[in-house]
Length: 65
Image 1 (cartoon, rainbow, N blue to C red):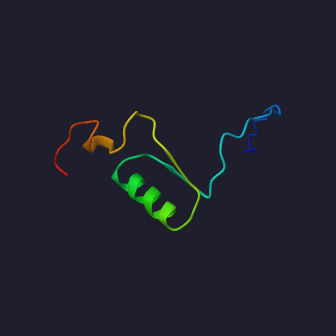
Image 2 (image 1 turned 135 degrees about the vertical axis):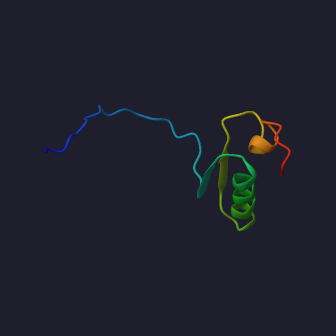
Image 3 (image 1 turned 90 degrees about the vertical axis):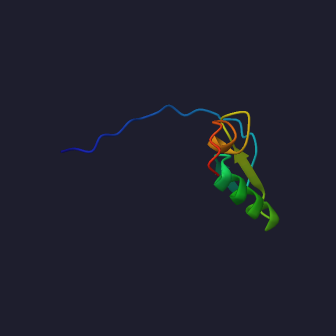
């Protein structure tokens, strides 16, 4: 079977921010990872798709934590 290849045209993408560490997800683990990275001197970015941190513990009202 031959390998499939998809060619995409070249494009210019604006760089929004540069960081040493990028964390995707602002749940309990993501928040802890972002804090630890920042405290150790890394330029850190935390990306969360919803408008709050804490994951399901805060946004989903799951109180088992």
